[in-house]
Length: 475
Image (cartoon, rainbow, N blue to C red; front, top):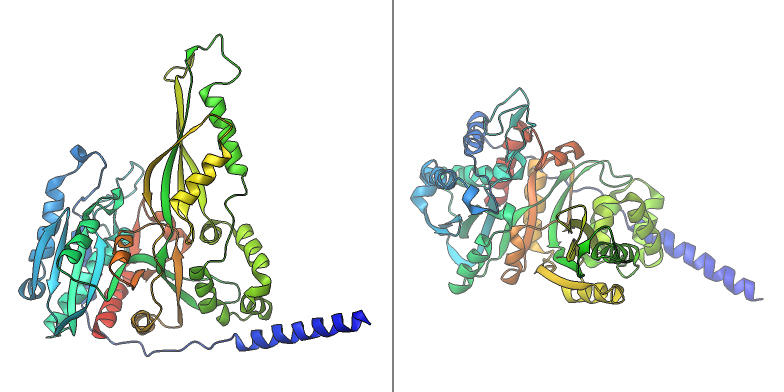
């Protein structure tokens, strides 16, 4: 009779799965698109003016055009008369911090961006700092990353102040000029906030964007907002020997020892996939809109189907896979300076992105354990731990409303950032650090970030400003 009990269990399980799937369904809540009368041509010209200033960051400070950075900050001060009238400002590091007083200091808002850009190659078909246009696009280094955001913040605040807008809370605009080289400016700004006992209610920086075809069965656009970031640890593996002439090599050299270690690390199962809280939250916000019943069944019942979800992520690869696990990228290697000379030492660099729930110590300990028999030294170069996870509450709803007032038929979802931003420093002083780039992108657009012929559509330039106006109007 045992098979009867088994059958009953199976039937009950199927019923539970179906009920949970039927419940796990939403209809997209719509907001009426706002009618904002901004000057589109002026908005585009304003960004073009910023693109023409070559604020390129280099790790070698002697290569930096300091005048360009000075000119850019002068533009921010002088081109916006209403902000100049209402704001105080101060230089911090390579950046600039504006402060506009509101009716209250209790829950200040911080709007972030960076105005430095990465170097350009010789492969551009346009002048990277010429701000050339055609019918649809504006071209230039920094259009997507991320002078468009700097432009949108300044233009939106200027617009609202010109309409005699008074903000309920203090507003801070925090721009950095060295995000691309992981500089300390935004960390210095966090120190400034701490020293002056300023605890932001919301910090808003670059991050996710609006994408299409993101999820099986979901036809709507999805605006993904980062609520947490993976951390990173850069590690150098080192092996040593006495060196010598390559004509009489030993069985193992520093290079072969490192090669064995790298293979062991790369094949190790110590770095496992895990469905962490930010990823589960993302699935809960998006999968419920899928037209596919099987897809909704899988994500409505993660307690049962997590192995299948992990397999989907593994087969998909890319960013989805990276969200699930700590990733290791083997990047830089050094050995002998001559092909016929045995190296005295060799090194291998690993860039490791740490998923939430793990620490740099966990990772280093795992690597040391994997290579302990290979006579390899493990050196930690630099570290940034995974951030805390921001709250999904009324603060997050401000983004939901502003996005739906700017773009029609758009789902809004939290997600986990696999890359790092300057806003990671603010998690120390703020519970609501959100990371979102207010423009619509395709996979082709994403390849242009840091690439050749970087460009942005004129529609995106205008909509980015409208989004910030919709966001700030709620404040």
